[in-house]
Image (spheres, helix red, strand yellow):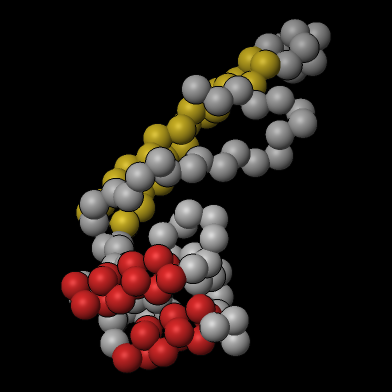
Length: 114
């Protein structure tokens, strides 16, 4: 449960893993309490959302929906420090450093395909 207070403007829910493709529902409940002398007490509300979680393909480095030569080329350009697709970097294995292991892991993912 997350409690809202005046210093929090939004809540970020961080996924600790990768969800399988599918349809997921998120249910949230919000309650607010006000001073009883102001409009008589508390109120509540429920919010719902449905998300479609798309499949994840590590070899699709540029995020265009397919793993092809352009992904390989984009990864190599990013690895060499020339340019990276939006929101990507060459730390493919997310270990905090960009090195040969990132290149090797990308090649393994690319060969595996989607």
